[in-house]
Amino acid sequence: EVRAATRQNAISKAQLIEWGITPESTAQGLESQALLGMVCEAQGRVVGFCTGDTATGEVLVLAVLPDYEGRRIGITLLEGVVDGLRRRNLSSLWLACSSNPQSRSHGFYRAHGWVPDGQKLDNGDEILRLQDPA
Image (cartoon, rainbow, N blue to C red; front, top):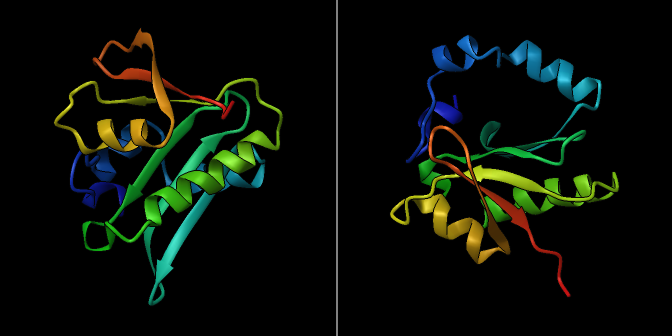
């Protein structure tokens, strides 16, 4: 529900199911530790979440409900998943992000140390890698 309600790049529950992303598959991924995830709740409701792939180091998704934006929820969730992935000694952390500068995610990730590596997906998304602090 959170993923379908984001301000930009919303993906419907039906589309997620078509891709094989269901509550059951996510629970299985978390239980097997193939996925690492964090959620933020407010008043008993999930208002944001972030997940990463523990085998590849990919941050798969970061989503926050529009009413909860601007409260540092997104960066807190992202930092938590990044920390968890780093504890698994992955050589590189990465994510796919819109290459459109008008997209909110474009500036968000760059402001937090993610840089394009020159690769693009078929849909035009750029691959960003987290730069380790020197």
